[in-house]
Length: 236
Image 1 (cartoon, rainbow, N blue to C red):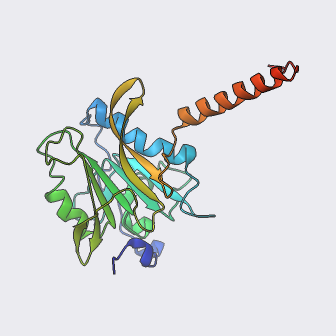
Image 2: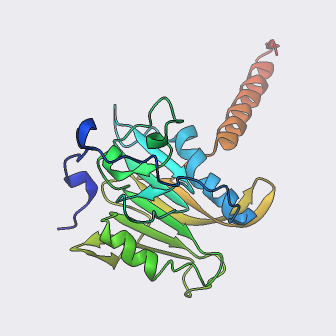
């Protein structure tokens, strides 16, 4: 059986036994990402908040990009390009240090999905990070390699099983998540490229906020046209 964080109870410890984090560096303000990766990260987070209803009625989620993932106080964090965690909720106040990063002991679980975007051959996406994410039991790990720097495949995804990852034949569906991943060639923020996008359980793209607005405008224009054909001049 594939083990995921969905199968395990939340592990949030009581407040009086949670480790202190004041000494931890949660951000260092070093600009390390390239423009493509920055846009790709946004394409994997913004649509979830704009268009995805979530994993189920009354269930929350957190999607974040380039945020520290702390799994132990004495260990350096991972900083995945994108993470998605189900059934967790951000604090209303994001400024306290204990709320600035994804501390697994605060959220009570690892993220459900972690995505890395390959931009060079030195990132360790299919070596060090692969082993590290398996060690902390991230249920699903995806590597997006648009320039095919590490392999001949643009997208590789795997699921955690018995302390290691096994490849997914089809990343278009991540069991238990209600989402999948697909490469998509199109224009995003005026750039025509091959991007990674979320799809829902029916295989439909999760729309960006801009796409939702454009579709709403098209529906409104169509309605105006239909009314005019009926001899009704709508108020615009």
